Image (cartoon, rainbow, N blue to C red; front, side, top):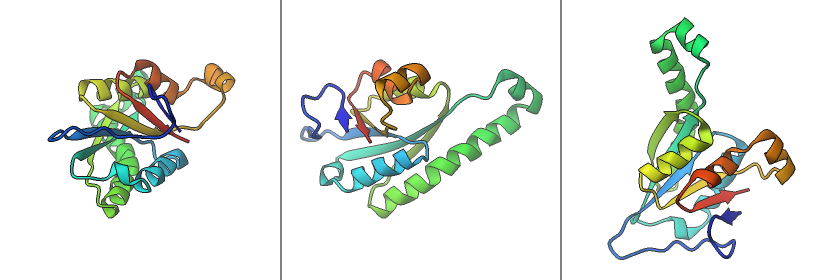
Length: 160
């Protein structure tokens, strides 16, 4: 686990009296999302009435030829169904742990879209799971987590 910009691997959530902390949970429905949720719900510092959660999933855009061939309505339904497959179980899990998240789905380049959403939405932190690949594999294959870290202006907590 690491926090971008933090001196130690531990998490300290800084609260200011009367300020609500906004946390963006970036999810994809993978085992790494489940590990991140398990971490989150097992740490008391992530609970409280002054923390508001948004759960974000980002769908990669379909190729233009596919979008053109099937039409706007079918593409929209596809994105909605795929997002629901990720968001519904995550939100249900969080509600069982007394966290009432706001679901959000977007379409675009995944890492960049997460970072842009965190910045434009004025979130205080992004929390996401990470595969934990080595530097060489990430360099060759690319990594959503690496793109979020490179583009995000708010702290990012990666849970492996």
